[in-house]
Image 1 (cartoon, one colour):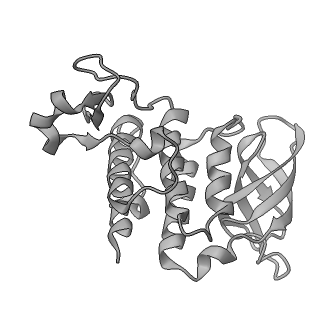
Image 2 (cartoon, one colour):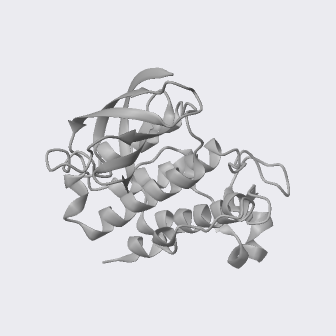
Length: 239
């Protein structure tokens, strides 16, 4: 196997004296994990940071063997996260979720765009909105997306206001009002592609995606939910 691709570093692990096992989310090949010889040299330290965009040359003599990678820095996006604790935490969440949820060497297709938008637009004032879109479409990519097309109780497509934690389906205001304390808010800003939601909408979306990721992926696969991701909605409530 041999290919060239580009993407974002999400994890680096020391291997041997001065080499690394590096995981990159790539445009064409999805999650790529490979061996980088001498990755811990002083010359390379700045390259191998989560969030950096890189070009990779990947190869292996036998398809079942771990890939060897030659990595070239394209853009040092990691520096945009290091001075802000909230941004760094959210980047850690994205990296952890992608490492645990995404299969290796399978195309990410449209989902890659949401990863790219978050990293590239991290200096915008609505950077957290892009992360919300990433998590919502992660559910969709994993095949556990929410059904927001119509009310689960009445079949109407109008006045949708809630999402059921039991079914992941939309509920209209009339049917859901008696149970509103047990329902999530309908993510209107996701459906309408509004990148300027208020803090309350984003906080509820993050609570909802945490719930469904935990229930429909991590629990089913007997995986531990990433600690950095627990209660991330609190970040929205900061003054």
